[in-house]
Image 1 (tube, rainbow, N blue to C red):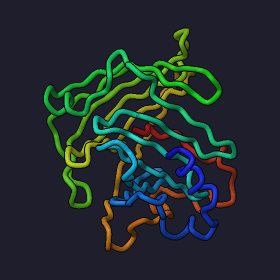
Image 2 (image 1 turned 90 degrees about the horizontal axis):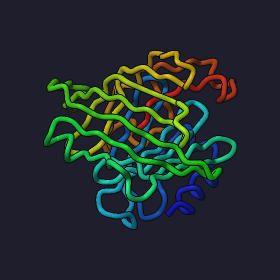
Image 3 (image 1 turned 30 degrees about the horizontal axis):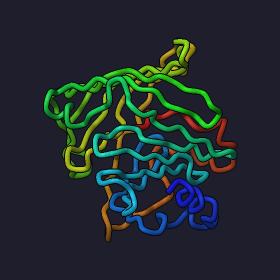
Length: 237
């Protein structure tokens, strides 16, 4: 499946970046989400994957930049940074405290502690929690439950690499998280405000479904700029 996914992006013609997202063979797109911070995401499922797994492909003004797969418990199974050099990180087996969407719904809080392996042979450790606040929000006709969260990622020696805290939203029906207002620390101790909240939910047959052009918070000058100088980190689950 990894080869299929990467091949699909490798052969995607440039005009398609401004058109419609086409998932790999055997996969079906079911939701497009236009979000703040100049991002549009296409969510899809593949028949060859384990039951409950789903993918998300993120696009900015330069094209696809991030791809991720979660399982039925919304665990971060694997993700790909689609830069000039494609890199992958994957959940290590037997996590100390597996993330559990079911536990979050039943107990109102879920803690997690797990490690990830990266293409360069390194490992990182992620710890944190998600907690339901008891509030719900309606965005573009979709009702979502609000959460508060915090996560920290370190190397295996305990050196801080990144940290985030803030609010997110969940859909019990789709069993996934959406970004919200938060703060991001890239390891230097300074927290920067972020807000990648969803703005529009677009379903099959609706205008804008499978779009690859982001609509909100986009800077016209970004089109001609290099990605490294324009991308702002987004907490991506």
